[in-house]
Length: 91
Image (cartoon, rainbow, N blue to C red; front, side):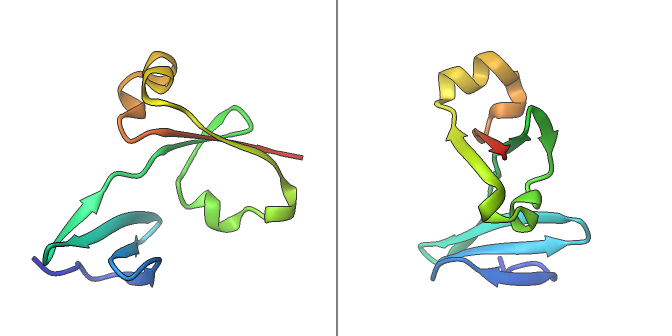
């Protein structure tokens, strides 16, 4: 399997961010196989946001970032939290 067409952004030697229209997807290459990695649910100032918002947030405006543990994420966000939850609060 090869990486699909799109804009590529190499994050690590084996991990990639791929842009399709308005959506960013995470992919990794492991043992010669390229596979999609699920992206976490992003909650920005209490509201659900697209994962790509991370690229547009000014780091100086971030007040806090919290990654929820799986049991806490499941109890708060249900099946939407299957890939984790990232809570971001800005100043």
